[in-house]
Image 1 (cartoon, protein in one colour):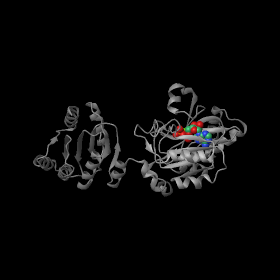
Image 2: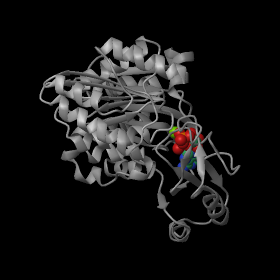
Image 3: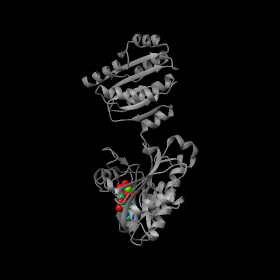
Image 4: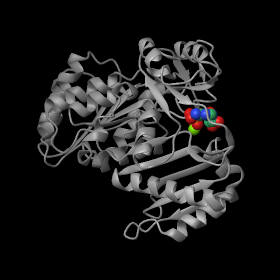
Length: 395
Ligand code: ADP
Ligand code: MG
């Protein structure tokens, strides 16, 4: 789960990490109350969406930049009105962009230099890892591609936590001395503590800045959480913004389905995460592209199968469906009945290939064959994958 910058900055502040003073507004009325906190003068107006690259993004209404410096309160209000309710397109949103539903007014900082600092889970080393660079403000992927020597990485042993020598190593790499070294030690300690205590998957500050009077401040804040640990943090779950999430994924979670939308054209409906992964692989292997990951679980009901069909068909990129079910706990005939019902209910026009195997498979196949519906049977996984790829290519 991701949260907005303004929420992440509140978390930062609660861990003693310096952030500019700022106020969020969700409506034009709230602009007035939020701006009342500021003296008249420069204010940074920041669109709140769950995507980065806002500074260099553009609104579909012509406004350039999702992060803008206003010279006065009046100008801040004017800029905020052009952002709120409008669509911002950045390199992370895709061409459809995101509708801005919250605007954040941030005290304008006098920037001396921008840095990059993040704590994330490095899956290769299976450790929390700190990544830092003197090249802040830009995309870290670009720094990694062009000047990898400007990135430092420190792996942390979770049983020991972040050690003082590791803090110094990063600070020296960033060129901090004297009081800045002290400030950095405090800041990175807070960041790691936040990462650890709240079960984060990432805590990223880009840019971390030094101000003209040598204060270290987090100017941007991105925090992502491990969904599997959210049950331990009701206060974090409360920060969830459903408007930022794919409605299909929200619908899926209501039925206990794991659904993740992808860019391809072949929808998959599978039971079990491992089988779902290998189904996506085999579609790719035969030259197709999966439109989603969808695991209906080990013991899905007829209703869950029907719901899964509707979610899949809500994606306009889908040109064909592959159902791949291994009936271990599940009865293949129940699944077949669910499929027949769903096909009738949605008056499915797209090609559908079904591969069933396992418990009560003979009756399951009979149910499909006797339905009178144009459902194509796959003999095994590779036969089913080849059939759906060929059918989608034809259309
Ligand atoms: P994004 O990463 O989505 O583009 P940022 O919050 O990093 O958004 O803002 C983009 C740039 O705007 C920053 O790199 C920084 O130069 C500037 N900026 C952001 N917030 C402030 C602020 N409070 N004061 C001064 N400059 C800011
Ligand atoms: Mg940023």
